[in-house]
Image (cartoon, rainbow, N blue to C red):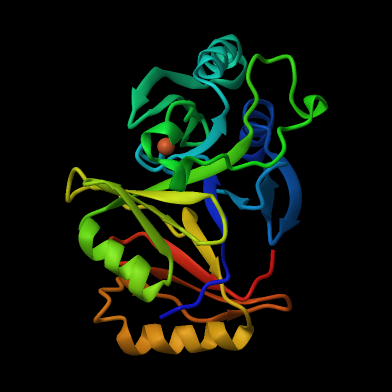
Length: 280
Ligand SMILES: [Fe+2]
């Protein structure tokens, strides 16, 4: 079993940095903290998880709403205020808004940005008291300082989640737990929350509605860190030897650069992951 030291990055394909980054900064409080190999690294001030942006073609695919990322605000009322703000900015940013709704004790608004991606702004104001503490305990210690994000009626306090669709949810849960060494939190029959035990952010894995669902590309993946380049090489050998048992659908070659060793694979649901020797 892999011994990951963290779920350190989510990846995100957009059509143009110039179009998408101002939207993520203005609406979600994400900041550009780095640039590497033509990718932009974004971070929320309260969250150590990185979002790595890849600039695809002008016709880069539109990802389904069931493959979104999300941030969290403190109250349900802020979700309504966020919706008002989105309405105000929708022509400038060319975004589409999916009106607020409740789901599993969350209350949220979704929007679509023209880079091909859906986002969610959600509140779990009522969830901790209903036993969802494991995933919904606050993802931040200190609220964002006012100067970071003010005058909009809501504050995204943390970058909290990504989502994946899974053809076989039960087999996926076993794979994430027993092969990838991740924590699987089960709250509902048709989904699970996959996370590293030491950090609050998670990937919501949802039972796929259709066998013909849209497959994501390598640019829409999650990165797990292990503690050394040799641990990555060992993991790669294990995936070569056991990949068939684990129903791995693709395994890329090892990639070695001056700062990390890594490889990509596509799992039993054809969702992409990366294992890397990176430190945050
Ligand atoms: Fe979500």
